[in-house]
Image 1 (cartoon, rainbow, N blue to C red):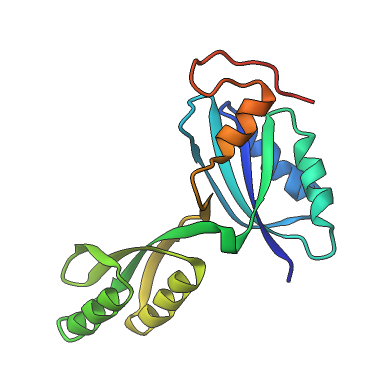
Image 2: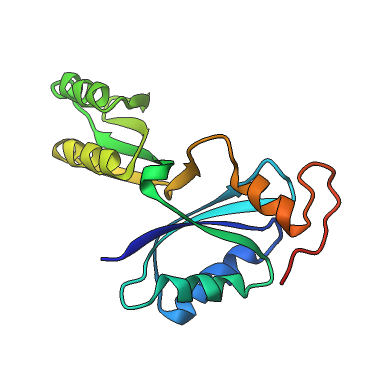
Length: 184
């Protein structure tokens, strides 16, 4: 499997997510994970996309993505040079008999209980993909009633930021709010 993580800076405007996901769908690329959110600049949003490009060159995917009008910059995130995490919220079945065991699993994975009642416990956890998968595996024996998991998010290690590197060379000011032309 050929999975890659892309960090994509886009205009913070309506329809951008639909255009990006539509491109992947039309081209037959599988999105394994997608997280979108605001950045420190209110004009810019950041997408973290984990894609399986088996059978397609990564460069082709990036070129296609870069053609979209609202895309400002694309960078591949290298696992060893970044900090990555996902968020998981999972509701499991609970009984008085298994609560001690549930609490032990929660503690082992540095998760936390965020809600509980007589028949269920809701757990929140953050961590890398492997940690989240291992936690889910450990919780299966209690009976998973519902779960929601965010897409992967990632930041490069060190003091240099993607926005500073990109926006300073593309004509978009980082602080003063005046939007310049950055398109090729």
